[in-house]
Length: 274
Image (tube, rainbow, N blue to C red; front, side, top):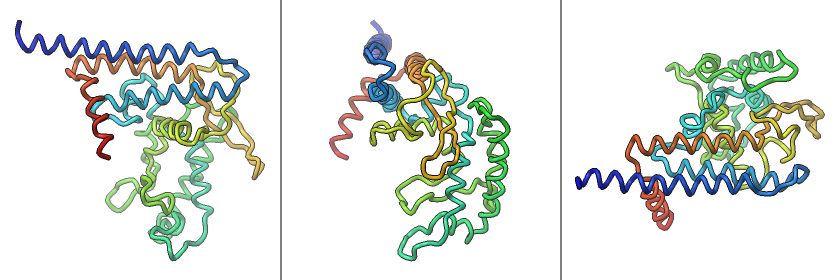
């Protein structure tokens, strides 16, 4: 038998083995007996779903969590910009005053003012607030796509979107328009669930878990009394992401002759020398 054909058959068997394993994980997560009234148990299932997606992203070469979601999940809104999330960040950003001389990186508001960008971000905030308040029950489908939104983001002298450190922690990524994509916000939710055992967007519990799309939930800030819109990722939505992403990743492996088990083994060895 031709060696290339033998290699192909071997690789396809390993792809099937990989996919079968992940399908079993997906199905076991979904079949967990959890009461709808048990918010903590429902949170545990969310943690398992986002961990499932993270494991998949580690198995596909050159794809991050966010890019995996955009490419393979069939989530049409993943490339939209969350205006309510951008609104909250800009409000917090522009109200900051002063800077600490001992900080290597000045507070963002000081940096923006020093570099003559503050007025432009204030105008961006005005536009965002107008858009957010156009409807009383905002839907994610009303958020603009990245390509349509980026024209509103302030540009530097070279015409590139202004990016800057949001805090004095230089190790954190710079803040730019892509950080408000829903794909990136889902990754932020994954980090909060996996590393801090909490949701970025409020309590684990939320209204109407029968929803199968992310929703904005009106919430009152207990400190300020202000109404804000918080994102909720229903379990049905997370399951659908896992299901569609796994199916499309399988096709990608076969088409591009990728052995996912070889990648996993390589990643496992790399952990030993980090």
